[in-house]
Image: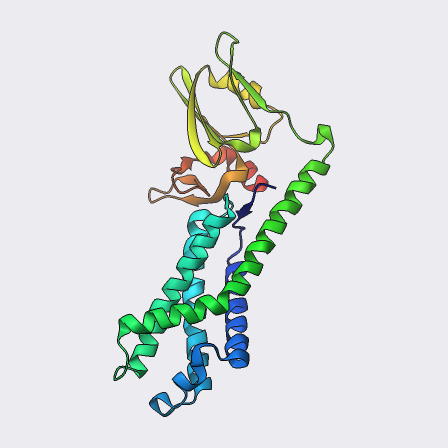
Length: 273
């Protein structure tokens, strides 16, 4: 296992994470009362500390759902090192502290400035949420390890061999796993191969015909979607119509532009997604 995590599909996962954070937050502060939080909020605005705790929990839920949905939009199905994901979690806590600091300052304007309220809320959230965030990251690492073990358990013939691309003279130019290929695009006498290398998008221009490439990728999960394109359905996020009414394939990697889909290949591609 390489210490990576994968942000998996499903908005409900991220909403449930928000509920988990909120539940842990409420339980922790009601039981342990860190930083004298009970005395700090009790009676503010004529309201009890329980009301303020619930309001802070609602702010946390909205903030974490918003930031994690934003994260999901850019990193869905992409691998990243666990510590980079942990940095994002810290950033989420800071964003929540900005909003909770505003709420706190509104009730303590006479005794506290906003610039003091934010650090107070950040300390409170950091101390509380370090536990659920740690559990969440460990859970993602375990899932990644489980998937890795499942791949290792596959029979040797169960996993396709890498694709060997040759030029028009039959000379070997590129060897790559089919799963790493995003799409192929023909132009004049060349075929551009777009693929992932260590999580980064790369392009290789191969001098060959599309007909020859079609024979090369036969038997792999790389399918024709247009007269000039082949695509890997595993990396397609959605099939949609653009502003001109043409169907395009949108990838789960933001830096890749959508590619056209011909009507004759639409249904076959849709069934593979």
